[in-house]
Length: 212
Image 1 (cartoon, rainbow, N blue to C red):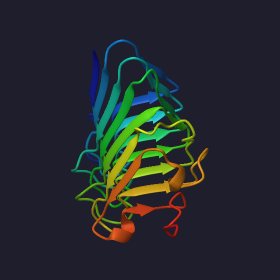
Image 2 (cartoon, one colour):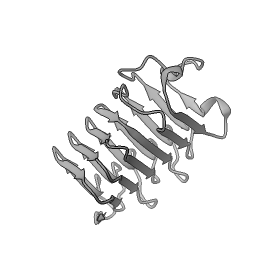
Image 3 (cartoon, rainbow, N blue to C red):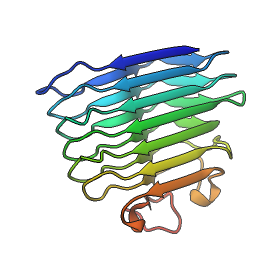
Image 4 (cartoon, one colour):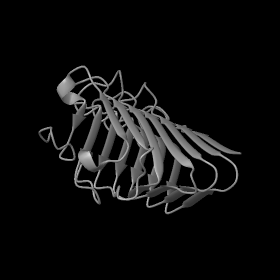
């Protein structure tokens, strides 16, 4: 088994404090499970990320991969995400599972548990995200997936999101999904949790719900 743990060291007065970050990288788990855990440093300007991936490839074969990210609660600004994936390709092959677990931090908005923007999710993907409970402002969403290709996701995949504090935070937000018409075609399960039932699932991927 392989374990990679990182903790951001940025202090107050800085931004973009990241626990584990990869850009244009390739991570692949072979015969042993791999776990990546990141805790962002405190900041006052936002963009703290527990685990940050950009233009990268993460894959599992016979074994599984778990990405766990937490944004530090004593932080300000916006965009303190637990796990943030930008234009990256996350793949579970060979019967393995790729798990993504994220908890948003504090701040003044968009403290998202797990944010996936662009790229693709392939195979059996298990996502569990919680928006920043102590965050104020708007958009503290549990799981946000936008402009991402889901055409090769499996029936055992699960997405579970819980909205955080503030307003206009959703359990699960899915918008402009590629390779799949709407949630009725999603082969796995999608569960949203929010104080207001109308905020449990949002975005134009959900056929029975008005877009945000």
